[in-house]
View 1: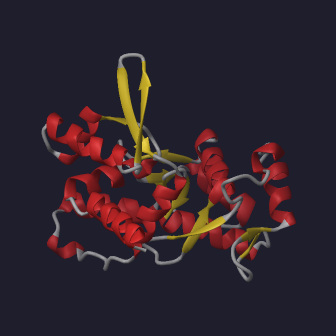
View 2: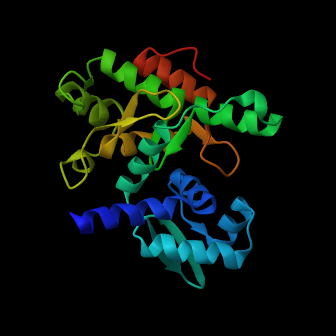
View 3: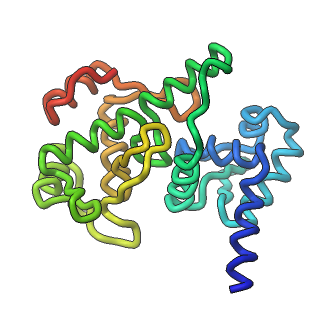
Length: 233
């Protein structure tokens, strides 16, 4: 018990620093970043960012990957993303009236649509999840699961490979509490493959270099045809 308490305290300490928290939130976009990019993002010196990254890697929240002369870091696995998103959902929403115009615009973009590590979140992610549930593709009455109809829709209509949706260490479908909408969106393997399909088909596009995404005209048409969704921007 004492060891568990110590471990929990150590984990909390990793996220108790604002710079380290900002680094982790930036990495929720699912991509790998360099130390220099994260230093610029968090507005700290490169040496300071490197020190924080060493602590986060040592604590198991991040992993380091090398490609040639370049070194990148990213979240260790999807469970870290779920942890960060769940913690964010505990926070009270900030009042945009006390923020600058740029911050308000960026915050609203995140609320409309974003990536949560490797799946869709925000109003877009929740709307897609709700539409899939209403269409009988997802079952939220007994937990959070894909139906047989949903599996057929993903592999047939959307053209996902059946082997990509086989059970593994990661849940096929998992509900992830959305920190802006305070409702669940689809995560797990199915959520990740669905998000990748949206990007591959150019149904969504990133806004700048962050996590925010926007639904393209092709995406609006696809959601209308596939799920009967309209009025989403």
